[in-house]
Image (cartoon, rainbow, N blue to C red; front, side):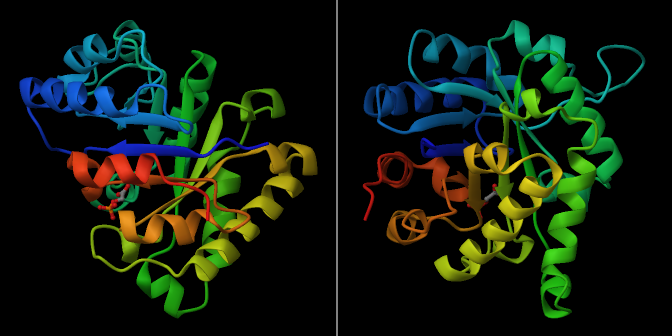
Length: 251
Ligand code: PGA
């Protein structure tokens, strides 16, 4: 059975002290929650948030990492640095990384493999732009991002991968895919995973939806058979929005 998984991507918000105070508030309300809960603060706040989350059920995530372990990579952050801080999950291939920072499927794949080789879990983000959706290319785009992003990942390691389907046009825009639309793309993703691996591996995979998830739409989305969780941006920055999302009840 797939356990629902709600992740908060804080993006470039909150200083270390603000993040620690916010994480303390969330810990008070989400430690021991029935679903898997993960918080991904900015790099500079990871150490402080790690201290706050110690011995809780809440996972610590990073929003990105370098494709190399170490070396002359000014401004990058290594998997080894993340691990030492208690990070157990890393978000990779977020559309903002793909579209604002030019990350390719090949680069993202290198990051996915490195994270998994070091024992981390990876949330691999995929999703189409508005132009691609209007050109009827959703299936082609998500299948390509999936196949290239997971190239060389074994079925064993796949158990530490979560897929986040995030239609780019729904991120931070207030536009959400309808639960039926999202579920039909999630079905495409699960079928492709079955092709690439096996039906049992595909059935075990958590596929999150991301893009303007809010307390008032989470229940409808999570009621769909192929939607197993959410990657939440804007609404992860406020206790009164994130707590009800993370503690949603099945419809
Ligand atoms: P949003 O962001 O919830 O603000 O739309 C989602 C994401 O980018 O992961």
